[in-house]
Length: 272
Image (cartoon, helix red, strand yellow):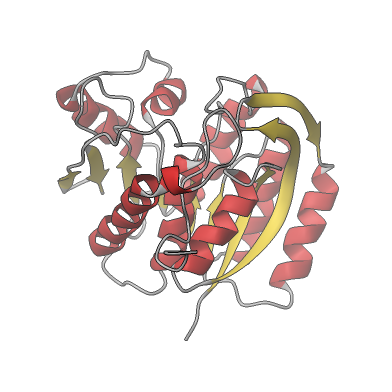
């Protein structure tokens, strides 16, 4: 059965991140993507020039209307922007109880622009983290969630992954996917932790500036694969492999003059 997946996130008009990137990744990995718009941005590959909030009650209406009709097998949460939106997303998902919730704590754009207001950070930590099946922070986001400076070694990442896992509920199988793309050097090791096992996913830095939306793409890929792949570690490995290939082919696209997008559809656009 083809899974139905949902992205609750912001809109990046350039298509490299946010809902548009999520739908591309979900589609590429065999899922039917749906979306709830939680925030609007004026954005291109060089930066964010404006953010327009979506009323929290309308975000709730979008979620309720969708779940009332469509079977949703997995949810990916990205940019929420506001504290009130974060709270209402947590409330509605607690009501509907989807089987998989992938939480990508989007706080800062690739350009350095803030995408989550400060009061929303505590709301995310208190309301959304307990619902998450998988938490997928990068190192700066992990630092914000834990109230500490970002770490810069795999040894320190192990301790951070353990601390992050303690923020999640203990009922059922819940994971931290800590991304090591901000590590110095050429290694980009990611860590998986479920409170017991700690697994390394090795990787190497790819020479390209076109890495806009990598976090969105990875979390959306996980949401697409979890309903299709019972083993979480296998789903995580497949999601990372998909992202790595999308980065490797990113320079085939010519989108903007800043940090361009990854190539979500590289297997199908060869020779185009």
